[in-house]
Image (cartoon, one colour):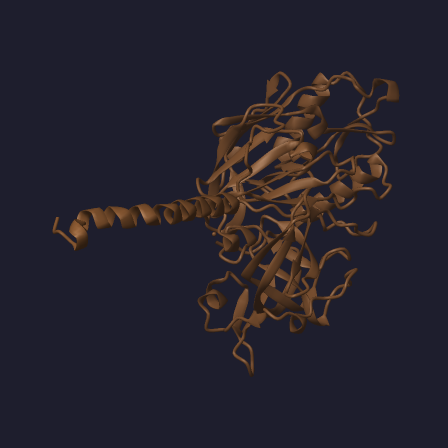
Length: 463
C-alpha cells in the first residue's frame, strides 16, 4: 500500500469507503429481496359456477351439466396453440350467470382492461385455447350484460402491428394486415363453429385479487378486440381467456410456470379460487396426499393431455388397457383434463363396461325413465332415506398416480332421478375427458415448467 496524506495508506482509505457504503449495500440487498418476495406471490382470483345461486334443483343442474358436456363432446376442439416460467398471480374467476337455455359457459374470469379507469370484462376460462379476447367496436356481436370495451377510453391502449411476429405466429386461423393502418387483423375459430374476428391490441390488465381486494396491475398484455363474433356464446360473457400453451395465452404472457384452480362443490354457492403462479403451500387445507402425473403433448392440439392407464369401479378393473385411452400418432384419442367441460366422458365401449360394473355392484334398481334427458347417464332409483347407499369406489389410474375420486365427485342425488353416476359416454369420439365435476374440492396445478399436473384433495373454500 502506498502512503497518502497524513500517513493514511490507500488500503486504509479503501476500507473506510467500503464501511461508509456498507449501509447502502445492505439497504439495497433488503430492498431487492423484498421485491423478489413480493413478485413471487401468486395472484389469487375467485371463480363462480355458471349456475351458482340461481335456484336450480339438483336435477336441473344435472341436466344442464349433461347438455353442456354433450355440446363440448360434439364440437371439434379449438385450434392448436403453443407456451412459460415466473411467479404466481391470483385473480377472481366466476362462473357466469347464464340464461336457462345457455349451456356453453362454464367458468368466467373477471378483470379490467385499460387506464386510468379499467373497464370490466368477463371471459370464459378455457384451457383449450390461447387467445385472450373481448368484444369491442362491435359490428356483429352477441349480447353482454355490460358495455363493450372502448379502447379509445384507455390512455395505454395501442394496436399491434401486423409486422409483429406474433401476428403471424400467434396460432390464429387467419391473420394479416388491416387495410389503412397496418394493424394486426385476425380471425380465430373454435370447434363448435364459433368465430371471432378483430384487431390485436396491447393494454394494461388490472386484476382484483381475492380475498383482500388488492389490485394487481400488469402492463403490455396483448388481447383480441373482437369486432365480429358469432356462434355459441353466452349472454354473461364478453369473450374468452385462453389458458393453453400458446404464446398469446394468459399464463404465457404473464410468464408464469404454473397456474391452478380449486373448484368448490358445484351444488353450493361458494366461489372457487384460481391462482396465476405458484401458491405458497400446496399442503394448506389439503385433505389427502399430493400426487403428480406427466402432461402429454399433442402436436395437433393445445389441450392438456394426461396418460390414463385404466379405470377401476369397486372391485373390478375395467377390461381396457392404456391403449384405450392413449394419444394416437394422428392426434386422435388421448385423455384431456378440461376446466370447461362439466362431466367426465369416456369412449362408448369403456362407458358400457363402466355401467355394467356399477350395475353389478349397486344393490338398487336402475332408473330407466330419465336416461334420455341425461344423455344416457346411469341413475339408480332410491328413496330419500337411502340416498347415502354405499357406491363402489372409482379410481383413475394415471401414470405415476392413483386418483381415487371421492363419492361426491362422481355421484349426485336428485329427488327426480335418484342416485346418478355423473360420467357420460363420448359416443363416437375416441377421446376421454376429465371434467370439472370430477375435479371438485381438488387443487389442480398445471406445472408448465416441469410439464406435470399436480393434484391434491383440498378444502377449496379455505384456500
